[in-house]
Length: 335
Image (cartoon, rainbow, N blue to C red; front, top):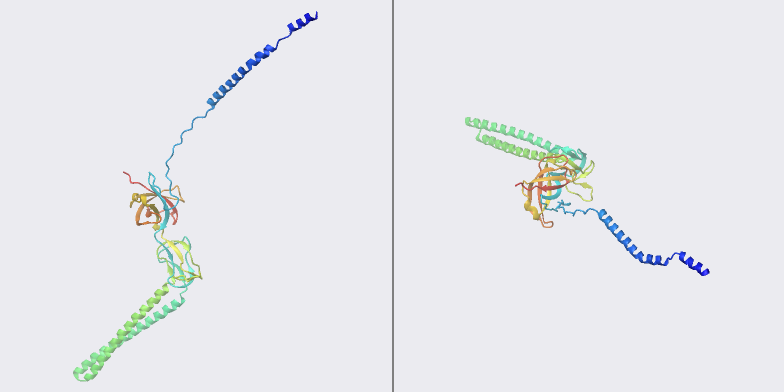
């Protein structure tokens, strides 16, 4: 009876050993399928998410303007160079004599005309000398007048003596004496005239010397620097030590402004007199100023291997100032 029950229970139980064996054989296949599916999914996602190919960069040929004067590049569109605005007419006005500054009549930025008094030095002693020499000249003039009167009177006496000698009223000796007095008066008149010339010359010299105590503008222009103040000593030569100035102010003729650039020897053949140029000031990069080549200086710099070129503006512009940095482009002639 017990054996029958045992057999019956065994028949009712589930045999899991075969299921485990079947499951163990199927697991690698399942894993391979999962991995293969993941790879396919990843590949598909990568294909869809792949970015568009970038365009291959194309090298652009640009023209670089030289940053320092003297360096030049030769672009295909025209030769370029950099330089500075300079004034062909520029002077530091100084005194011709040594003296103390009494008055300075100009300021920076002031326009002056040729011959205008810029400063006045103390010329008291020079004024005294000039007045004294003028008095000597007046005295010499008076002496000339007196000598001429004496000579005229001596001539009349000689004529009268000669007339009386013909009638026998005076002797021949009296005639000779009258002639001698006439010659002496003539010589005295000549001497006085020479003394007058010397006195006038000396008077003019001291007058010119006095005028040097007024410092005048040599040409019309703009004052760009004021160097002296009232009370300082001015001298044409520096005395050393920094206590003596040699200049009053610096004047620039704005109508003489032009450009100077240094062009490399390798490209100077592309520059011709009268060639058109476009200039751009660093201070106003949006403004193109028309210009032209004035001249090529007929010498080269051994150190920099460059040739200096002068360029003139076609029209004046109040914005153009001396020593401004400028870039220029030499335009190629049209064919």
